[in-house]
Image (cartoon, rainbow, N blue to C red; front, side, top):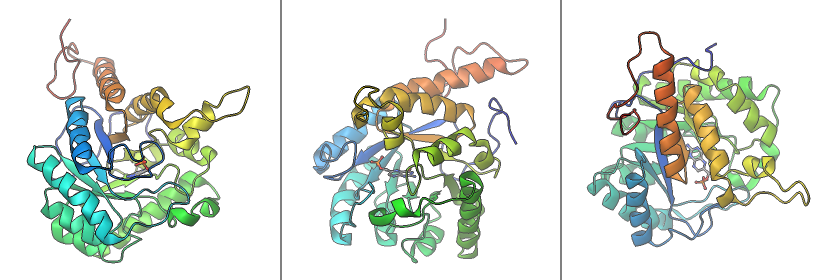
Length: 309
Ligand code: PMM
């Protein structure tokens, strides 16, 4: 098991840039109802502008999704999801943004890759749509396999584990085996513990605190804690017990980004890119300085402090 300051040892899927630091995935939800930014970027033109703004603030990838996965939410029809997502993916990809498409549908993944998406991000890890594995195998796109136990409408009652970290590692390992058997290649796979999906706050904290048990699988790991409810619970008003609202959870999110980067995550998925983009550069500079024979952390195109001292 790795220590907190060990550098990650995974090989990166083809097509993703090798950075000297944890990558930053910015979120664009083209939805009317996502829990933290629902409705803000529902209009495609606003979604595209937001994606470009996230890149300008330091996002290495922009994750475009057309279906809310918040607890209790219902599925969006396929044609509506395509209508929301594809124009945004196309415009951003044409503008040179590295796009991931956040979808559980093989048809949407396929069309998004045709429109220029570089990564498929499936919160069900290929479980929701039996055709997903084939599409991922055929496109060869990097594939985010998130830990998932069921649709959002009823996921809360699925939050029952023996040891949550061991169970998540075992279930993700089963997923990986099934995907490989379906023709997906080893070097396409990225793992994600699925914070908040059939998880209580205690489960989420265990998965973060023991992230090394996931990175020990030797694959890139994506951590997506941004603005999630467990942060609202942590920061609840002590007098009233009222949860901290989603848009006031960004400092806590940046703290999770720091600790995830330090624990060897490949990338963090966040709504507010600026704080995290700076934070992961601080972690990279700190880690370079901690290595014997290090050079002064002044530059580094991708990973360094932006200006030398
Ligand atoms: N969480 C949300 C959406 N997409 N994708 C991955 N890979 N991991 C996650 O934990 C995840 C995700 C939750 O909704 P949001 O888009 O409103 O943050």
